[in-house]
Image (cartoon, rainbow, N blue to C red; front, side):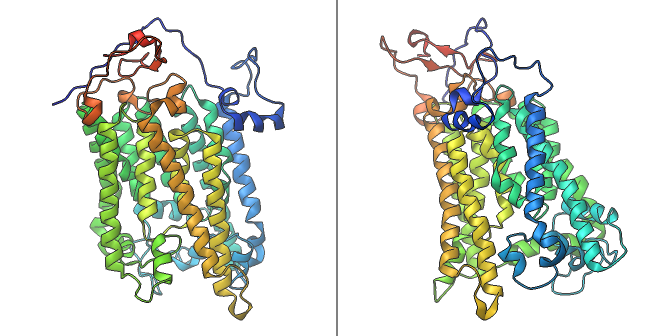
Length: 508
């Protein structure tokens, strides 16, 4: 079995201190001119009440509130009158519609009570169903149905705002030396626009908290939180695959085993009671996910709408699954052959991104899954904003397309070809961010996190750990350094592994 040797960095290296984005990122520096310009070298950081975590949390709440204001045109009329006005005003949300549509207005118990209409049971995972039910308990069940639906949306918005704050705080604390990267989450326009479309923020908050626990070396807590996140939305389970590859390379099997056990037990604790006593209702989410045809936002939809012989649902399910498997094999190859072990956040982002790109549906709120992972994987303002711009284009595109399809002969909105361009923008933006993350993995000197002197801040026990299993070029010793070579960054040597080594100290 190949073994990659590592070199211990000096324990006497000084602590480089927190990273200031305005000093390393031109876009952040330019943006800071709105509030007085980049922070000075003699600024008294850490002595004010305005710590990074408080600033980021308040900005996240402020942006969330702006997102609520953006939905204001729907509060009194667009959700309730007219088929297309909620789309032309880009303020659609599933939440008020499902209050009555999924039986909460009538006091029906999710998964246990059968629903009238085409959907026999609630089509959401169990923990999300509990979240929806709790919001129903807090909603006044009096007055007109519009009044109740409006209250239900407001109660959910308040609960989701807590989730948004948790996400921002967890990102700040995960990369301890880069607290201001949390502003990328807080200021993300697509985050504010899509936060209250559905209940995805619950799973995103639990996943962000799980990432924080792993960064602190608490593998069991990570597993429990990830299991709970998977009980709220299916995508978080994908993070176990890249973590497996990284723990394989570092030989951290015990920690991975604890994480896996915690995830399985937590998921079972939430799901088994419902599965035991309401089996039909419990299976509805999985039946619906399997039987659902090609839908909004996917490249499959472009194919289906431009073909006289569109792909069947079974074909799309099988092919999309194969594509995900192939992509995950590529992620495994990256993890085991990269010249330096990839950071956990990098591979976690790629794992979720490839699932989104190959899936048969892309609802606009799915961008929330990627935002905290993207910030941890590639905290570069230019690349992040390029991706966000593409997601905003898609956000506007899907509502304008739905306005077009629901406005009858008036044809208000975006026709099919225009919507396809909006889908292409979403796909291109996500692929672009994937490409720069892969480049950072293959060329660690381009990774802004590692250039600042860190190894893997979100990696927990992987941070600074030596490799025990690698493949390809990573398994071969580096050639002896020539005099005058540029400095390199060490890794795999403990807490100080991010220290910059001179050319003569390079591992050989």
